[in-house]
Image 1 (cartoon, rainbow, N blue to C red):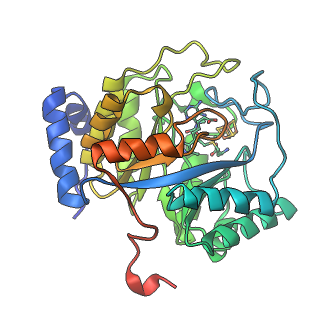
Image 2 (image 1 turned 180 degrees about the vertical axis):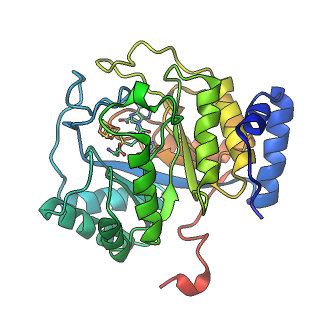
Amino acid sequence: MIKEWTKAEILEVYNTPLMELIYRAAETHKQNHTVGEVQVSSLLSIKTGGCPEDCAYCPQAARYHTEVKVHKLMDVAEVTEAANNAKNGGASRMCLGAAWREVRDNKDFDKVLDMVKTINSKGLEVCATLGMVTEEQAKKLAEAGLYAYNHNLDTSEENYNNIISTRNYDDRLNTLKNVRKAGLTVCSGGIIGMGESINDRVGMLYTLSLLRPQPESVPINALVAVAGTPMEDQPPVPIWDMIRMIATTRIILPKTSVRLSAGRQEMSLEGQALCFMAGANSIFAGEKLLTTPNPDFDQDKEMFKLFGLTPKKAFADKPKEELV
Ligand code: SAM
Ligand code: DTB
Ligand code: SF4
């Protein structure tokens, strides 16, 4: 039986004295996962910038004047090369990101389906984050071999309209439903450091905890404040908030893969170590996230050696009979 958390209970967990919180999260982690095993996922922006949406944090929104250069959808050959590099760098998952509001049924979507087929044939788990999808589109992605779909709630329902006005929370939840109906695994999380309250952080975790099945993967991003976006002057999120958020996510969603996502470039090794201790068991690796810098594969290899971490193999969570 999955425990049903109330917002008040989640808030209580979030506010637990830090050492006790980390200790509790680490215990939950040990009961449900292999300690020290971390999933390494590579991220590739296959279509960059020029997005019609107004997400206040995003450097790819056309309406903000950032240094991001618009790039049309990449070719399958370029993506194949990037997948080879990711595999050689030790990644077991590759996530394709597109600055789209939603998927349209056109040649570009057919191209994305080809990319998914190609990367899947290399034995990498493929994830995509392409904006809103219908059930039919999600099914096509699943048939092409997609493993996971990333679609973040980003913040609480109450705070959503302060961050984004061009779509609403129900649109997000609806896409997550379509993704589930297609049999894909769900990756959905959010961002901290956007000026949200602790109740907003708790509210987001509450909504994620209500999903059935619960998301297999929850990325926790620290805002990367990019010049030209409305969030450019946001102060950096304290590492303690990141650790608290990761530990709370681990306790509320014990079986989920908790991803220490954007913001690692600014984090110390000690800070990241505490995030892993608090239950993070997944990262994005490679020198770029979508448009902003991230530690490169070699830096992360060093970190893994130092902390005694091992990269998780692809499809490790899938029952054997489902593997082809
Ligand atoms: N356009 C699609 C969408 O919005 O669903 C997919 C790509 S979008 C860039 C994927 C996610 O990246 C967002 O939901 C957000 O959580 C995260 N993100 C974007 N800009 C960010 C930033 N500056 N700092 C941290 N996370 C960010
Ligand atoms: C997620 O939660 N974080 C990743 C991935 N899903 C697609 C994206 C982070 C983007 C950070 C800003 C950028 O590099 O443009
Ligand atoms: Fe577009 Fe996604 Fe960026 Fe929002 S987060 S502006 S939808 S690319």
